[in-house]
Length: 526
Image (tube, rainbow, N blue to C red; front, side, top):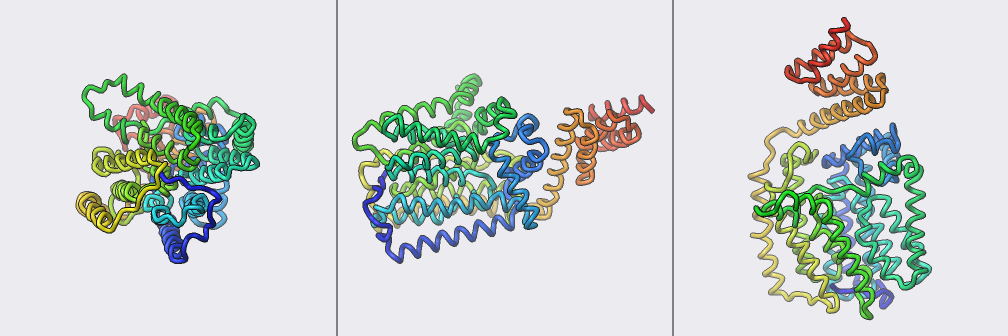
């Protein structure tokens, strides 16, 4: 992988034509993201974040005990409060404000990478990969549509790397602060902590870096960190992503001799093995007299981490994009096409075809199996990137015209034709778009039923009744909401309302045990 040399040239080495081209690509990408954020709801991650925002305002750090899906650092509770306020103040729905930080982060990340490569802007490979970063379809889809925080983490990590690569000791505190801020969004930066630790000479500079990061984390995680540290540690640090959807774990599921006990071991301990390899490699590489830059090392660690990951979410592909500048144009182009094709196919399937509004994987199901071709090619493209990093000592050559034509011809049978068939024939929409909005109403009714159950377990029966009533008002067909209403009314001695709720639940599901038990108990107190 080509290594930028900071301070050897001015950014003015980029010609006006290239500046216009990269700026135009970045502007067009920004516009696409904004339009997606304003006109679509996004994936099921978005309604999960909506739930986190509502429930965190009610329970604070108690959210970790109530909702096992909340695996984010407690600093995000503060962020969710700001997003909720912005949504109420402006009248623009919450999904837009959830995606705005990622959209802005992409633009600033491009500028940071541009600064990091200030000394190599004359290199054609750097210029073309900067252009691919500016126009990245992966970032358009993840930041503009998906609805999660991964691009923000990458921006803060880039900032930390930039401060580190400047080389001055007085930047260690700034680098640490940026790293700590990234850890306030997700704990993913732990994967590259060995790189940023060992690249610094001397214990004093390392201590300043770690101390600054820790200070930012303690401030931003407060006060929740001190209110429920055990629950926070269990859900944030102990989080494991979806197993079997990607890479080695996906391959292991297809090997007939791979035992269940091996799957359990890989799922629980695979990430620790990968992190150990990254730590050892960072220690050894940073002892070399002619070592790669921090940007190169960080990118290599993330490439390897994702290539060997035992868990996966499609938004993780955004981890890779900002670190592809300076690698060979063929490997970067391959990843750009493969990741863009996979995301487009996945989101289209989850959305039920065009037009996109809600892409609900909880309803549609796993993409593995359905989109194995695109998944496999994308995984291979990440492996190719990881392999390309080993060539960091030599500047990657730019392919000639004939090679560029051949690679362009390769894209048609490899990506464009299969994607066209997948989107237009296999995953064409079979239901009206209005169903997406109806589905969201039902989802929110389910969430109010969940909230009612949470109140019930806390002994707050009056609040449980209010939450359940809200749920049945949104969607009278949600069984759990009627059951929750009946149970809470029983505890409050509201027998008539309990009987009515139980009878409604039985009409929806005559054999439901909870509904029949609620009816029997309410009838016993007639």
